[in-house]
Image (cartoon, rainbow, N blue to C red; front, side):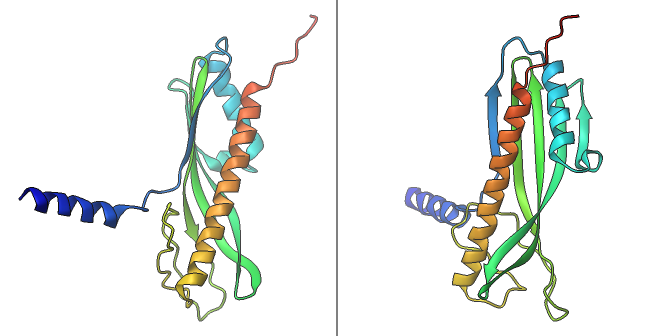
Length: 183
């Protein structure tokens, strides 16, 4: 019985490994003199600057709890079949929580919305991007595993770059010093 339990645990862990959605998260210590109110206003200002239409992006704007939650979209391009082409959109969530002297952000998970290349293509979407090495089988992509893995890796690389750019711009916005006035 003991060996059966161990074997079952190993099988379950092998079947579920590599299925963790890609989410970028960090807790950042800010200047300890910065209140949650100041950090909230900076984060809200960042949403306005980072996204063309922050009103449509921002879904939660709760000053009392210090929570800002939104959804973003980015276009994704992949090299496939010998050419670079639009591969649809990556939709992602972005959450920022603030407290006195610190804030936390999460970017992800990323989900692909595939745009058909012709009327013959089946519509569909790639599941949420995960840390899986092998791509899932795309029902609309008539290609071998090597080509699917290439597209999968390209989408993950673009999500990673997007998250890096967003996190760097957020950190910069959260550390901006207000101009001092002589008045």
